[in-house]
Length: 303
Image (cartoon, rainbow, N blue to C red):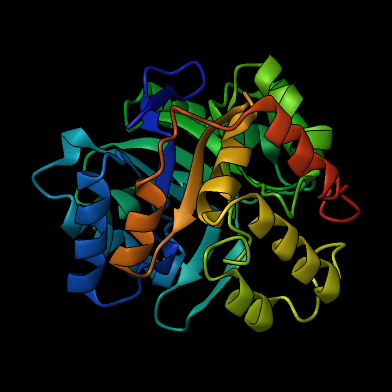
């Protein structure tokens, strides 16, 4: 599978990333999904300390034992959680980041993290202190690179201006084109990779789109009404029978995108997303057509 460089780092990640949040708590099944993904050419796994209150990291750690050097591992920090009470609060402090990384290392059974991300962020955060925490961990060799997972353009701009982040994870799909307006060009200009999560828009842009629209789209999605989503789905099926491929290829077409992040709770979902020829891409003509039948959404909230 095609691999692309993460920002200015020496890390190369596959064009698609397995997002591990949806793996579930069945350890044997989760490990099987991870192994199928790795066998299919994916080298990048994305987890977070908050997922299942640390259990997701433990599952990933068990699954990659013996092949750690073949994998680019991403996890996230910033949600100060209590495993017993199942609650958490936002904590981007230097003290928490530098203590919690040790817990992530323990759960992941590794002595370093390839890409460490702040799991959110607001303009009210002690941003300089947060950056200092990541920079020190990088200097110590505990992490190889760092970034931020955020949809907030104003927060992203702060990190572009103040830090040496190598990547930003943000929501981006045919149904959510908001990053095109404010962040993609900025990040591309600064050689900061974008990892696009939610490329299938809760599955509404997948081969099971009709079913998922009835399950998750009846109240609309961003500035799309339920009826508009149904009409768009119908229009997209006129373009191709493989909606998964169309949705992923659209996102990857933008030069700022280094990898698309998809979640999987079954082996079938991994297979349908890894059988795509990502080196082929989509034509400029099709790309412009897809733009013409979707909305150029804008950030009204979460700034």
